[in-house]
Image (cartoon, rainbow, N blue to C red):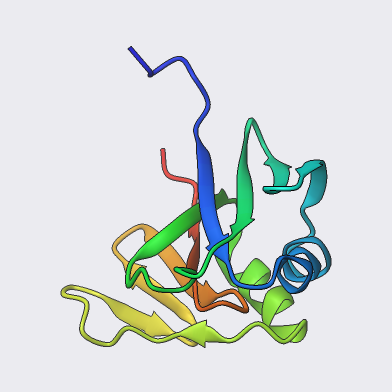
Length: 126
């Protein structure tokens, strides 16, 4: 039913201008549209919609993941821009190489936006 349609990550933020600066200047996303209710950023064939809410940052799980070619390089680039990476030492069958978690062929790194929303970059698989 939905398999042929793109999906959009919808992320609540407390302060829309602060969040927009992070998503544009730090993550390098380009704003496609903005409404009084939030801003949409195109990312590949999908996108991210950020919107103001008092519930921002309350999810304890990953909001959005980007599948990338080189997790290690992108993590280093983001870290150079001041992004703080999360360290999850309790994940089974996982080791860490700096900020990158290694699970077999999968390499991933988690970071947070200014509101505490958990975001992720992971290597493209297969």
